[in-house]
Amino acid sequence: MKKILLLLSATVVFVACSKVGNDEYIISGTAKGVENGKTIILETQDETGVVAKDTVKVENGKFEMKGKISEPAFYTIKLEGIPAPIPFILENGEEVTIEINKDSIQKSKVFGTYNNDEYVKFNGEITKVQKKLVDFQTKNTPAMQAAQQAKDTAAIKKLMQEFGKIQQEVGIATKSKYLTYAESHPKSFISVLILQGVLNDPSTDIKKAEAMFNSLEESLQNTKPGKAVKEALGKLKAGPAAPSVGGAK
Image (cartoon, rainbow, N blue to C red; front, side):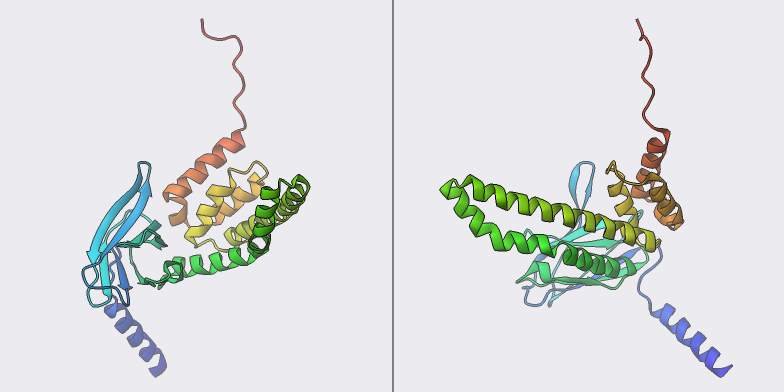
């Protein structure tokens, strides 16, 4: 009984210490080596293009943003003077931690929420799958450039054929990894985005995609991408519209 009471007490303390309300988000960031006054820009994308949602200044190597959004979505932050964005998933009721690496933005870290931790892990898995293609490009770019300069069509054709073979192999493996992830992660925001993407592929198994969509948490089904998936599934199940006979005069 004492152990149970201690656990309950610890839970109460943990909840009480949380800075984030259910209807807001917090972005806590560090920017080591970045001078005071540099601007951090929070951006997202809508039908009109890239939209700036908020800006703050770096103070003593730190920054913080608070706000509200209607549903989970991909956002980016940018450090003034560096065009490369840092992507992450933003949602209410969560505190996202971002560590900016000003010397190598690609090495910046995002963590602190389930969806962002999943996003980092998923990207790591996809990078492993696509490594063979990247390695081929890195190794053979000088040979391709030399062949193009020498107008050696046989060498160019051979390299392109090898590249195409690896590209097809990696493409199949990548799609398999996407579908496996979506099928096994019904709570992840990435899963609904994957389904939205794969439905553009004519070879996708519609019944399997529908089953995966139905297994997603209801909150994900009701997001913008979730509603788009539901609409796409409806159209695909209905099939092409029957051609009209005759026509209006």
